[in-house]
Image (cartoon, rainbow, N blue to C red):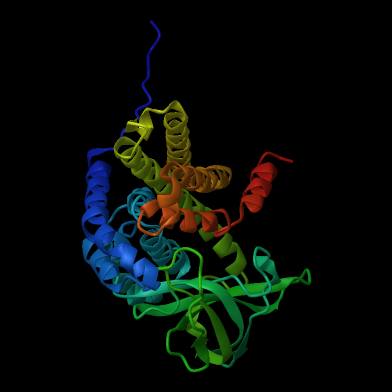
Length: 388
């Protein structure tokens, strides 16, 4: 007799409880205030404090470091639910955990973990990730920021661009990549160094005037003869670039989850609007053109969810997941952009105003095809993983 095995895609009770908790938080706490904050371009400090008290910044970290003892998939579920309401809040969490705290957890010394992780996990402090440079963009290997060892002190000079969570009242440090020497093959030796906020010579430029993610904190940073202890090296000297490539692989799953949330939020808003907005004597959702448009949106959101679930499950099992992470990020970010465009169309003129959430979603979606690896980079990674 043939044994029948069932693939169960349902969330466990713990995951489902977390998802519902974050969904309620997004609906009850984020939704009522985010529109006004977004228009002002104001960082949602009070919301972030509440996220910290809820334990969201500590989701994937062990309890011994002040975390919740969960895993990366738990973080992804939280990001999806937050992004169904607002992406600025979601990216603040994603960057704070995936890019700020995770390098310390993955590569830091035990002393660095003990010093920083409890506060990071509690949301009392935000860490930032300084990789991108003004002239580098996707070409992270073109790093020009330098760090020279002077006795037991690193002396850092250079600049970074588009750095999330780098200028908030919560920001505790930025981990920067810098050229620390030359490899035997003549290439750049790139290392990662932790620079505490307020260190002399470390300056934060005014926030960018952005099209979207207007409640997210983003700055250009400059380092002029910044001196930090040699012990602030994060991970192995010369391994900084490789370390952050690993961090980016993980982060792409998180961005895919966030993108899925935005895509699903577009469905939520469009279904609600299409059922209440009447034209020619009936709700517009009864028109096949609108109904099919919303159905396609649901297909894209559902496909994106399956893609990031697959990538996250492979990661948690310790299996290779680079290709799956790139697939998830590509599929979900493009789904978010397509759904935002369609949701705006469903809402008509109202979709082009800031009175409706889809206007905000439309402004937020495009960066998802750029940040943490452009769509072109994802296609390159996928092709490379296929042996092309």
